[in-house]
Amino acid sequence: MKSMLLLLLAVNVVIGCVEKEDMCCVIPEKQPLDGVWLFFERGFSPGAGYITESVSSEPAQKLVLTDGKVSGTAEGWENLKFYRILNDTVYHSPYIAFYTTDPDSQPSNSPVATYSFDLDGDILTLRFRWCIEGCHMAFKKIGRN
Image (cartoon, rainbow, N blue to C red; front, side):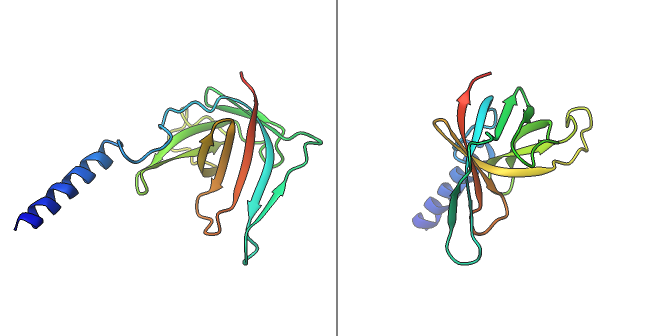
């Protein structure tokens, strides 16, 4: 009986923390990612193993994030204009969503791309959210806005 009571208490504490998002997110939902980011690495799996490749700095592929807006020269990202950091309610972790039009002006606006992300010092790693193999793109902060 005592162990059942302790188990119920532990479950209640864990659920309470998750509901308040106290234990779920390494990166707070409002973490600023503003800056100039250089695309320097990509990783993928062709089915066996994991391959990490350097991205050429000539020409430099940059991503500029400023107050929820996106611009830059990173190949394939030219049409993205806005970003938001959102919280995944299933996995209780932040993710970044990119949009071609302002999501605040059209609340039903669906993101074009979403990524889970890690921020380790000046390295921003975007991970394809549903990629089982762990595909990623890594950016190095090279400037501030």
